[in-house]
Image (cartoon, rainbow, N blue to C red; front, side):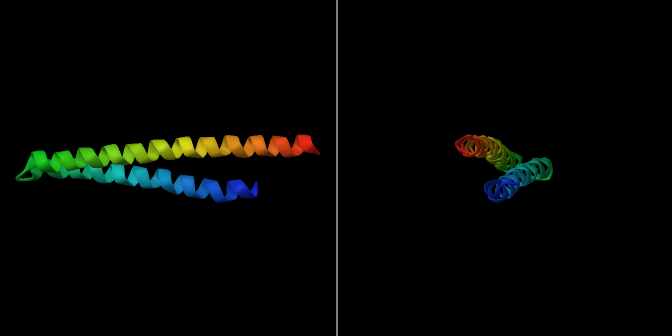
Length: 82
């Protein structure tokens, strides 16, 4: 694997997993809201966590795809220069 990819891919995958973990925390918060004394406040916190996790995972996927495209183009340019 290309050295650039060896640096980019693990970070992007960890970022996507981090976003999914935040989303899981939001889902658990929503479940907790069902039994809470202040369900609206707890539910809004869960919704905020779901949104933040989704945004993190979504942006991480696009960052990974963009990085893969840049590396592929740079490999093509290096090969055509030879």
